[in-house]
Length: 363
Figure 1 (tube, rainbow, N blue to C red):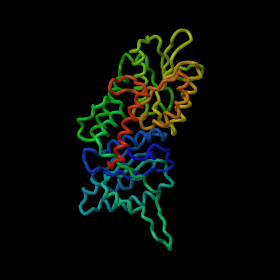
Figure 2: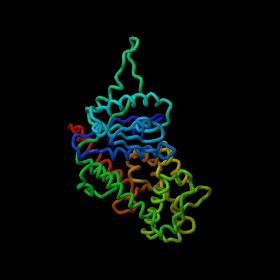
Figure 3: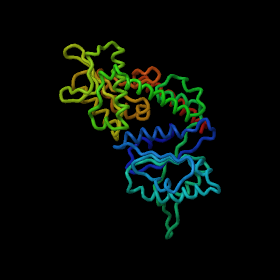
Figure 4: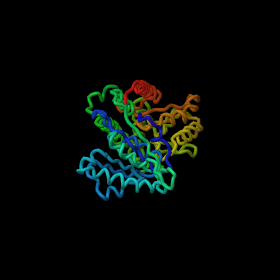
């Protein structure tokens, strides 16, 4: 999507991102980037992120706080520069940023995003220009990654797919940023509706696992679990056959639907929070549940599943041959579960079209 895989890679130190602002305001994507970074941070970190967005005047406090570490720091550099006459904000930003980047080697993972036009980013790049000292060229601070979003209407189809929305549902959005805010609102409405349903509340218990009970993870995990139970009920499974947060043969499971005396279905709602490498988490969950001799469903958040699709495929591909494993995502259009294989096929088709057009000269 942004032309790099590094956003979803495990980062031992803070990551600096230089994001190029599009020429056409319809393709402004700072809100999309913030949500992608949020998801990758939640997967790789073991604590909720502290988030700061600076889009107006850059205060001394904000400048001092702009560092890596356990959080996400986003600066709309153009807006900040326009808020102070004479470009003083940009000058202060460059000076402060160099000091902060010298501290990166000793800080825990985090993300600093600088979002701006090509001219502004060009000024920021001077920080990484090799300097001649004692007749030797060297660079004192780690290199950033540079990203940009294609200015193509197909991006709106991509957003619909990332959030599992019907095709064309975001066509009337004024910008990419408006589209992603709307898409996330629809998906959250589905999760909130299932999690708040009093009938489902009789059946769905809260998570016992400490990570799944984290403040930033618990509502999503509970919503996915409730959506799974709702889907089972819609499919004709009786309430009396469904249990949640139970232990089967010393293995805790999210949802268990009994079928007869010895058969049944196990469903695991996986947000992938704090999994570091999602393939490790998913592979372990699939193997341990299949070892119980029952059918197994893995239920994923559509945005997380989309970002980490190569990891999902690597982790679950070999288990699919067993015939007892199915993977699903929450479909925001219907608020029910949908097969992951269909979601993946749709995502690959949109990505293929975008990639081919990028090769034809689209930015």
